[in-house]
Image 1 (cartoon, helix red, strand yellow):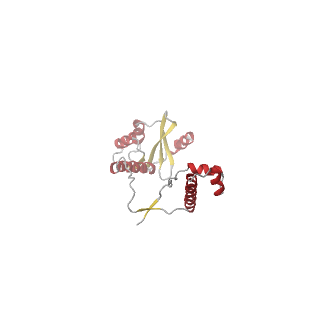
Image 2 (cartoon, helix red, strand yellow; image 1 turned 120 degrees about the horizontal axis):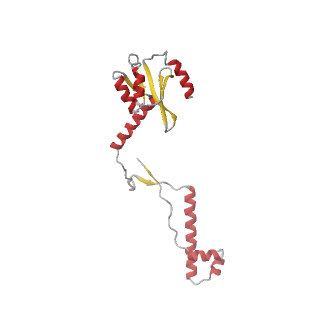
Image 3 (tube, helix red, strand yellow; image 1 turned 90 degrees about the vertical axis):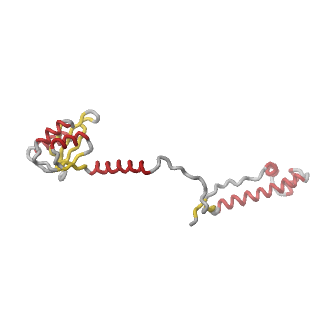
Amino acid sequence: MILYCFLSTKHLCQKRRVPFVGIDDFAFKRRHKYGVIICDPQTSHPIDLLPDRTAETLKTWLAQYNTVIQRISRDRFALFREAINEVFPQAIQIHDRFHLIQNLWTLHNQIIKKVLPTRILKENKPSPSSSPLPLTKQEKRREQNAKQKWERAIQVKKLKGEGHSIRHIATTMNMDWRTVKADLLKEKARHRRTEKTFKTD
């Protein structure tokens, strides 16, 4: 890809004199060696490739066209800005679309950090206008079964308190003797349903 751009720009840069150029860096080898590509923003065609992205290299290239170039699109690289200000102080510098949005997003984050507190505490107090949600069919059935089992356990405990044996209680109430023993050990179940609330206007 780089070789293709080089062959294309070698021919184009000698003939094209455009008043509007775009400048951006690229990597020959990421994190090791970078160059600069100069394009025509209106056609997206390459104009030239520079072997590095130093300010001196860019200033040397720009100096060749100081009477032609009027507008320059660039990214936020500080050396680009310094080179353009020195060679073309009268040129209009424009951020490309990507870096314009990036600048706006950075500014947005800075404003948000200044306006909003670093922490927002959540209050757990119930709203005075809150009321419990109605039970679902499954929850109603579960509560009804628990109520019936507890009433049965009360009756079993009463018979046991009157001196009846477990076998007699099982026969009388048509129950398995193991269920009778379980009822004698049973305590009133706690209401475990999590309260769900909704706000009413």
